[in-house]
Image 1 (spheres, rainbow, N blue to C red):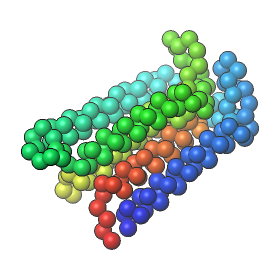
Image 2 (spheres, one colour):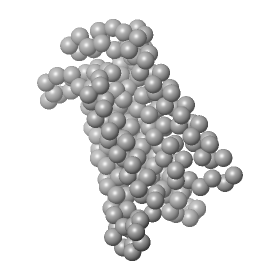
Image 3 (cartoon, helix red, strand yellow):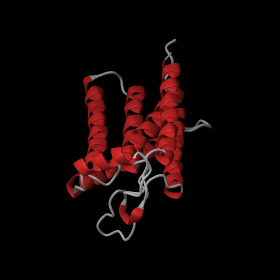
Image 4 (cartoon, one colour):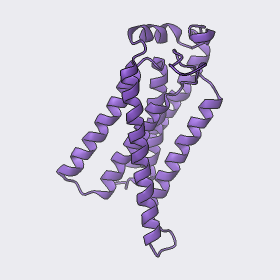
Length: 217
């Protein structure tokens, strides 16, 4: 039942992500970005950006949270590598670590893809930058949701149910919220960039769960 639910939620999130891209390329497209760059659903995006203009404090906070997510990903990679080196079995590490590595690779491929296939450019040219940058989906949102979300699942697999596990999972939830909320209001993304980042992250993490969480019938 859990596998079916995860697959259904992940599939719905992916379909909504594709639908969002179609809307952004076809509905209410206007050249309202820096250097005349266009964005779809422009009235929605511009209205939200006017409410939350560039805020470098929240931007720097989310940058630090992004580095933390990378450290968490690196820690799991080291755990998997350590298991493989210690194991005498042919497979090496537990299969969850191989699937987790696949999840990270999929996230990296999507990052590179959307750097090449531009859906939106940032609503602001950041200090120190010389031109517009791709902004859809929000890579920091995707990074935090995927890394912290999959870490939440890994804790369920490798830690017995306890107060310590609950606290760690709450911390992961808070980190996801802070990153998404901070990225939402720091003004470096359009509103739909954040929505896109959340949707694709849900799709990725739910499909990860399909392969690593045992079904209870």
